[in-house]
Length: 444
Length: 155
Image 1: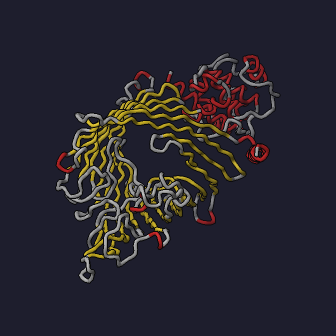
Image 2: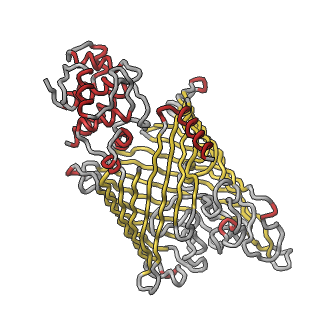
Image 3: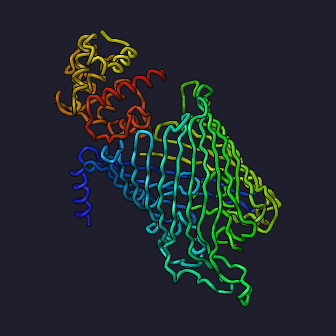
């Protein structure tokens, strides 16, 4: 075995010559999360990752891989490949393009709105760059990812702690996307049009059959979704930038729907998904004021008042709750995914020592308020009672202090509180939640 | 004569133009013209850029003298004048010549590896390069200009 590894390293070194590079990082987050005025609610937060990466040119291609070991109390042993790609960029005048990029392997995939999909998948991406436009085509799957960390856990069987518990890999889904961006179309504005299709590839025998008349635990059907996004981004004034997008979500989802012909009055049937999402973000850079940055952002997504669960919870002919795939988090302590939710947030970041030429400290104060757009029904956080009435869910306020004494060492102290609307929360989640963490990162 | 750093920034920024307009700065310009033409940067060219930009040798000194001085300081290995220099070696040479501090790993293990990382992190290198990668003379001049501009601005 040692000989094989040694031979592999020698071949890699010979093939890559002087361009071979490697490194890694150690990343630890330690903290505490608790509910104020609730005894014994404190929970220790602990996450440690050791990461190793390697980069090597292979002729006109580049090999880039990163693997990590992560410890958390929930998943004490997790070795994973964070990314592993072969990529190349060539000039392609024959194709009417200034550049043609090709990336194969495990890498980051995002949709045009960046609110539907922002995660790592295995696949292929082709990027065609033109003078005033760019075209990006991607095909990817989550089938080779671990089930406990499946980025596309969007059906009941994916998140059920009992169903398929012994299975190592995630339920397979296929993603295909096409994004076309017109650069500087007018008044320094970029127009982006994106189409993303997600196909559920699970075998039929894993799914609940259509026509069943009694409710089943962990019942779930094929969940196929499509997204069409239109986005506008660019500069509005010196130092002021915006990114605005709208996304139409269609698809099909299985649910226990009313059925006059059924003996129970219900049967499992597919329903059309028809949902919408819109978001905007304004960022103002103020370099002359201690390198500060002000950001205002908001998102609105349609909901379904009769959905009793966030995942596959539809109970009538049309599912109107937006179905996100792998959206980003919008705040640290508490965050709602798109789907029967809206949020409006503000953040202000400043580098207090910038004037002294010591750009080692950054402070960021942020606040995000969450709403339930349908006024009732399920949202992505289980702490919110789907059968309660109320639009306002709560507000998350965070203060993050980042100290970087060296280029390869960084500490981030984060303190945040989530103040919930008691009227919409389940018992046990009605009190203010505090979360404080200290993160330390060393790159080597 | 040792010239100030700001003069050097201007010289490097205008280096490409000087090829066309001809020599106005005497030997230093002739040498930079030659460096710009190097497909693979040599040890003496790297030493010349580092040592003259830091004012550690006179700008009318020859590249060979600059390399000998850098070697005496222990900032570059025992290299022949015309031997190629790696990106990491050049970055290390520049950091030592200008007395620029690096990251924690550079503090513990000073050398080309972490010097190259520092150049990438601080944006002095326009692209991410491996420490062992060979670079062109034009790339080296561009990186030097970036570093001097930013370090000069910080001081």
